[in-house]
Length: 74
Image 1 (cartoon, helix red, strand yellow):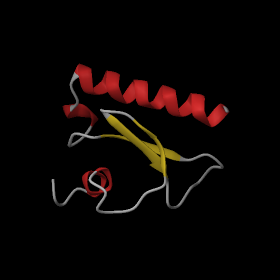
Image 2 (tube, one colour):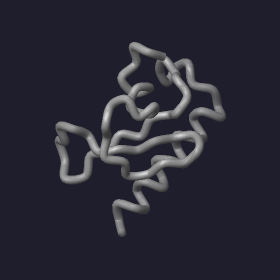
Image 3 (cartoon, helix red, strand yellow):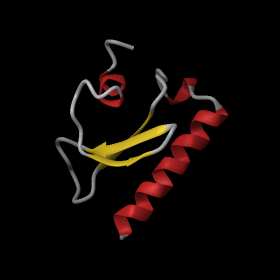
């Protein structure tokens, strides 16, 4: 989606400092962090919001979040 900031980051149109990436999710550092470790995990497919996310979408995001947490501990 052209007007979605996160879709543009996923597409590489907007640079981001990647923390984790798999086939379903991309995690990157926040540009204005409010904590020492502040990472955004977004789906690679456009989803308007969590209310619209399918069960598979929620599982993929959960898995991506878990892997980011594991990397943050390393």
